[in-house]
Amino acid sequence: MHINDPRIVASLAELGVELRAGTKLSQWTSLGIGGTTDLLRITKHESIPDLLNLLDANHIPHKFLGGGSNLLVRDGELPWIVQQLVPPEPDVVLEGNFAHVDAAADLGRTVTFCAKRDLGGMEGLIGVPGTVGGALRMNAGAYGMQIGSYVREVKLYRAAARKIETLRGHQISFEYRHTSFAPDDMMLAVTLELPSKPYKQILEGIRICNEKRRSSQPLGQKSAGCIFKNPPGASAGRMIDELGLKGFSVSDARVSNRHANFFVNEGHASAKDMLALIADVRERVERAYGMTLENEVVVWNG
Ligand SMILES: Cc1cc2nc3c(=O)[nH]c(=O)nc-3n(C[C@H](O)[C@H](O)[C@H](O)COP(=O)(O)OP(=O)(O)OC[C@H]3O[C@@H](n4cnc5c(N)ncnc54)[C@H](O)[C@@H]3O)c2cc1C
View 1 (spheres, helix red, strand yellow):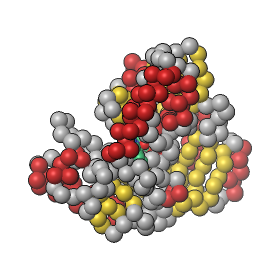
View 2: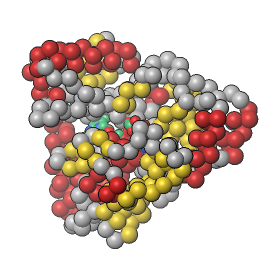
View 3: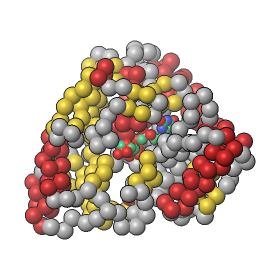
View 4: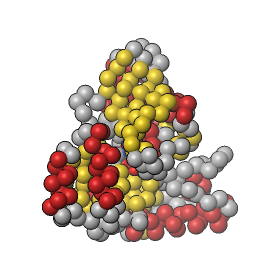
């Protein structure tokens, strides 16, 4: 979708929003898949209510992009525009055991920044690509921890109220790759409360997590992490592996030989290829195990 109307283009400029026309989302997603649309880069949180009013009044559908590491975006000319936050400088401010973090901050760099100042707890998240906002939205986690455990406050744009609000941690529920935020809420900033730990001890935790990832995940390849959520009491990866589906492919979309729940783009896979692979694997697991696998990857196919 392209914003051509000069009045809208001028209003975007007034709001301090950068318009990047004709952006290829394949360059913004870790899968390297996705069609073309206009990208709006937002520098001031305060401009968001007016921006959303402008888009909605002009019937411009929109989606929100973080770091693109958990997304499968459809091919071709996309029927909606995409918004993204630009991180401020600095994007993390510490106050005792509290870290005030902008949603656009890089998750890995935030974990390392806090670690160097003897604040730990998030070692498991090292190696999870993307932004802090994306991690919050999905309640990202690994190796027995999840970001939600450390959340004390979230500043967000509440689409239903059409304004920026602040929620306390106890007002939000964080479950396995699921949160109580509304689908169109926009995370803007978060306050995390992190336990004090000596840097050396945190580094050792990070080293162990890095080693586990390196030994089990196709880190050099284009993926979106785990494609499916684990059903209660079961492992999606184990079931796919037991069915002998490692290496199974549709064109350049392939089930990783390293980790059966990671699907990789080996070159020029399209969204159509990846969706066909996902549907096929889901059907085989359902036939064999009677379980319907739910996507962990967020699919923008509409
Ligand atoms: C190699 C690899 C390893 C991974 N390992 C893990 C892992 O161990 N654990 C894990 O949980 N995940 C893992 N992931 C998946 C992914 O990195 C996480 O889900 C990450 O938190 C997504 O953040 P993002 O900023 O990239 O979000 P995106 O992919 O950009 O977006 C994902 C969803 O969140 C929404 N979103 C993003 N930012 C915001 C915001 N500020 N406000 C509102 N909505 C927003 C988007 O609209 C979209 O619906 C892995 C991915 C890769 C490629």
